[in-house]
Length: 408
Image (cartoon, rainbow, N blue to C red; front, side, top):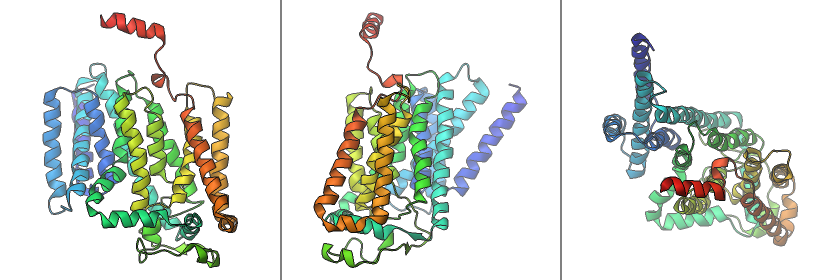
């Protein structure tokens, strides 16, 4: 590449970085952690210590400029720091490829391309939520509220009380809830060293469900009890005996609050990350399982979601995982059956919540049986689905023997 183009490309990279630093709000978790994912992929490319030191130094400078006058506590500082390191990583990776080329810096290329795609899509997701808020002034929060109440209690209100009574938990909840984006980058980084080309299956796993989920945000828009019932949450909720007297209708919610359900993409992502740690070290699989459990509590305790959102997310995740698995043809029943059943259960829950709540209020046995059956079937089938890609399959005996000989 001619030197002039390299200089022009470097100038363009710097211009984009300046625009990001001065016009993006790094305090927003999706923005800060979304950019921060690039730092994890930069580290996964196994750079030399000198490059890590340079990226860290540039990140500190950027962080100082973004945090100055905007310090809002340690959780916010972490978001801003990760965003700053992410911008520095993108600058470094882009500069390395411009001046040294893809052939000599294959690892940097494998890190830069998914980093750029992840950043673009995550930023797009952030602003798509804002658009959904403008399109849907009224939401189905009351329907989700009654569905949860039909269980005999309000899970999100009770979890919210636990969090309010134990403020020491809040930084941990904030970190695990908002850090789902880092977990996305983390699973990509875990598989990046196993392939010479970008692992597009992981990118699809994270963003295909998001694109489908955003479409359903317009079918069943929900904000969460923290936004829909700000005066009551998490102090008090209506008792079971009066729920059948409510007149169900869409209720107005301020457009400043995101319509991020139904389904809960946080829960969907946590489930997919856990499912696709197959083939990774045991500690990673355990960490992913803990993330799923933490996400259940986080989504409820923060008032961002109802239990209904999480129940619906299980068949939704089954549907998505079955569609994205690549090791088996979609024509085979191992894929199309769970995809069809997951989709059918997901749509059925939306129909029930919209038109069949009077049946759910008739007997707690009915709603608990449906929730337990749908959730159990979804989880059981998810764990038995074919692997999403060959890197997740167990090594064959011959391959293990060859690896042992090579190691000797």
